[in-house]
Image 1 (cartoon, rainbow, N blue to C red):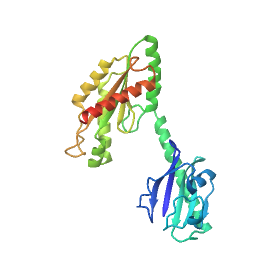
Image 2: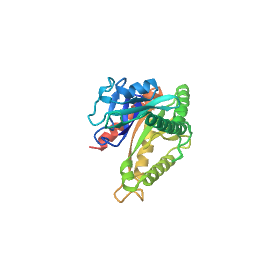
Image 3: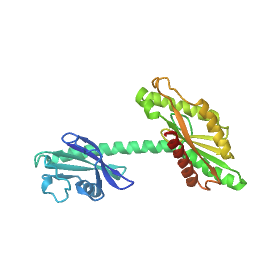
Image 4: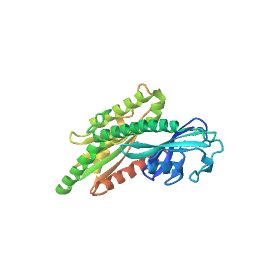
Length: 283
């Protein structure tokens, strides 16, 4: 049995992400180990691979599986950061040798490298000024622009509207037509949003199927008018998504200074109003 445990930063636990072989289908995936619990945490904290000839007699073993007696563990390191543990198990005691541990350690180094590459790719996406799929501005560009616009509107005493927009039904489109259909729907909707706003407004790819609008010097009524008008034309039927696929969208608007004077307050209010609209539409 082979397992990969990843450190989840938010609450600092180890989570079983991958399991294969004996027992892999018995609820191991998703299992959580609190900080400091078991051999996996010991190996993660020490950074030293470990070979255990008999798991049943080791004091650090928390969950003694009667079908597994031998175990070995290797830390996963990404960019000098411990991010998880790769472990292997066999039924009889004393089943692993030093050479097996060496091989597991080599594999763990490759896996750690792959994790680091994936992390760097995500960082590059966040740093990019435009989204590769839709051509819209990214979150980073949005926050930079919003910060500057808030300062300007505060100085000249003008309103500013922020809208969060969720494109609904993307999961169903992906299920019916595959990722290409989902991407096509996102591109169509991004184009519709861009055509509906003023030249100096900003349209943002805020999440996988979430968008944001930054509308300088626009009161709430103007923001709602833009989105209401868009709703009349932006019910999308992607051609490859299946005959029954229909996409609509929900939104929430927050206005400076009435709903908040900083970014966090504005986004919190817009998010709450977005959720309220989604709840209302689901009834």
